[in-house]
Length: 100
Image (cartoon, rainbow, N blue to C red; front, side, top):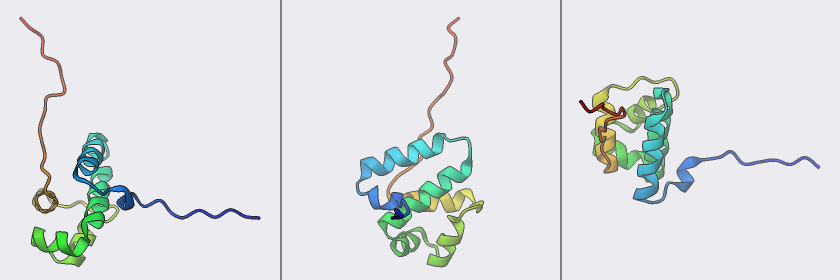
């Protein structure tokens, strides 16, 4: 008997703000920017693509296109989607400074 598996859908597990923030933070640390764009798409899907598009001031189709594999969305688009999701970027230093 052959075993079949259902495709994994991260959006199904993004059900609260803390999980979403951790998921996006982990994706942002990956050196491949496509990982963050894909994670942003997962979160938008979890929250409702049509609603996020509306709140971001984008058409639904435009949002799908901007967050699709291989897309290179503009910073303004990413920022609008983050605001619509109720999250924001936080910049922190990653190197230790030497004391003199």
